Amino acid sequence: MDRERVVVAEIVRPRGNRGEVVARSMTDVPKRFEHLKQAQAHLADGSDVEVEIDHAWMHKGEWVLKLAGVDSIDAAERFRGADIWVPLRERGRLAEGEFFRTDLIGLTVCERASGRALGVVENWQEAGESAWMEVNCDGRAVLIPFVRPLCEVDFEARRICVDLPDGLLDL
Image (cartoon, rainbow, N blue to C red; front, side):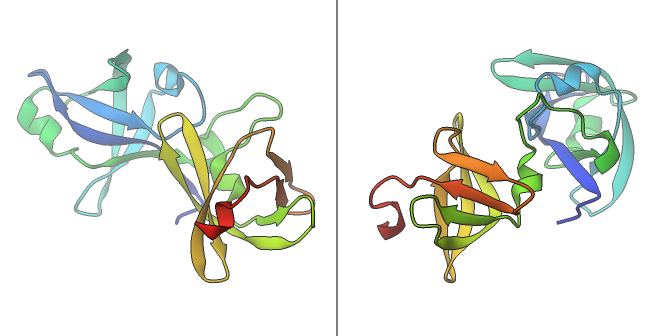
């Protein structure tokens, strides 16, 4: 993972005949695309190209992006599967008490009651509105829900203390 890049969207497919694309948001910043004008696209062939976002709007729960100079289905097809990214310094701002998930990768997850270290956050998985920390627990990947009442983040100590639901580690 390149820590200097922040992926803000994945382009799913072309849309319509004017070169628009459907994008799945990967950002924690609400309405990020309404204000994002310049970004990079990491294409399937491994190359990066600069993109200008002329217009962005929500349609049926997904973002539709109109990229400058992309005016046909064929031109939009080039971007299928591309990641839209910005440099880390442009990732946006969150409300007080909110976290970028990428900042939590590498933190140790501890059981709050016992203080026992369970493992390290390696990645995230999404399931609808829920976010799950993928934690390496003794060589096995365990999914732990990231739910505010159950999780307390301590950046200074580089840990996340959790109250685990009964039986979660047995799954």
